[in-house]
Image 1 (cartoon, rainbow, N blue to C red):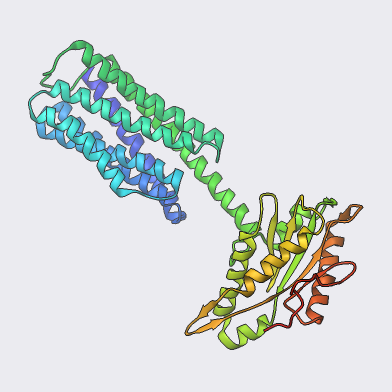
Image 2: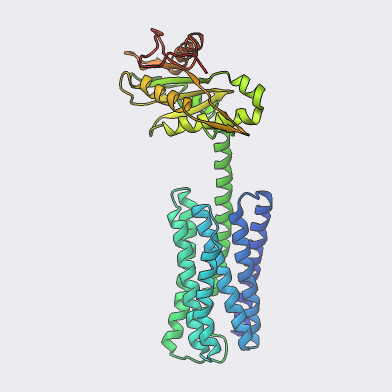
Amino acid sequence: MMLDYNSLLLALGVSAACLAVTLMGSWLVRRSETVLLTATIGLVLVVSGIFVYSAYVNSPQTWFCVASFALFHAGFATIWGAGKQFLTGRLSIPAITVRALAAMVFSIVPMLSGYDGLAFIADNLAIALLLFATARQYWLARAEAPAPLLGLTALYTLTAISFVLCAAVLISDGKLVLGKAPSNWAEDLSLAVCIAGMTGIGALSLALHQWRLAARHRLEAITDPLTGLLNRRALFDEHGTRPMGTTTAVILFDIDHFKSVNDRFGHAAGDRVLKVFAGELAAHCRNGDTAARLGGEEFALVLKEIMPGRAELAAERIRRAFESREIHIDDEVLKCTVSVGVAPGRSKSWDFDAMLSAADKALYAAKRAGRNRVELAGHLQAIPAGVSRTAS
């Protein structure tokens, strides 16, 4: 039985080590996925704990057990930290440290006091709590990729239950002092579950991060890298084949005298202006609206469920907000304006190209009329209340 137990420990250690190497390799390929590195560090600590605990099984010296407990709790706390990092996008080293130290105190103090049976109960319960907490992180993130995340939740939960069983068997035996490593059916079962769970967690983790990578590539393909808005391709993919309803409006924006900004202050300043305007555009978007950068200094906004006359007012709010912004470039303060063309919804449905073309004609009418104004498509008449003014 002891040989079988050592064989299971060796198998678990090798399985965890292989998973750590695989995750490390994945992180080296995609350095931005730092959660892979965090999980790798946690696994390395757990693997180290397994081999130190194997030494304790063969030679039950207290310091072997204390070292294995410390490594286990540091490792499982770090694995919890990887789950938290996956959920929130942030690594919290203080939170990992607090959980690791609490688990160490919970289990190591009884061991140093001579109550190794109580120490093993505390050790199993502490590990179970950390695993349950890890499962919870993936459960909370399940909306991102339901299948792999629910699988990870189940495997971490199942592994945690196996450690609870180990603690329960030790509690039922009622021995506070053992003098050696616990050896019972629950320990064997827990090792088997850990080996199977490690394999499943590894496969699901890699599948999950491949899914994340593909999702990131899809996002990059439809996003303007400078402003973070949708790009022209995404705008046409979303609206290009759909009839535009009577409550839909298309608005085009073109930053006035943008070339002179680049010529005078440099392209970095021009990029700053583009980002500022994109921020104003995004800030005025409602749920269901679509903001995009068409290219250069030209932007588009598609408004859904907009009442007659409201699209022009929305465009005017954005124009005024941008006009009032002070953009600090080195030691100077730059103020820019934007010309706007609005194609409001019609009594009959138009396709997107037709509305975009109408908004484009209105935009160029605004440019010809002196810039820094909003023009309506169709009747090409500026809206009142101080919109018609020359550009600064």
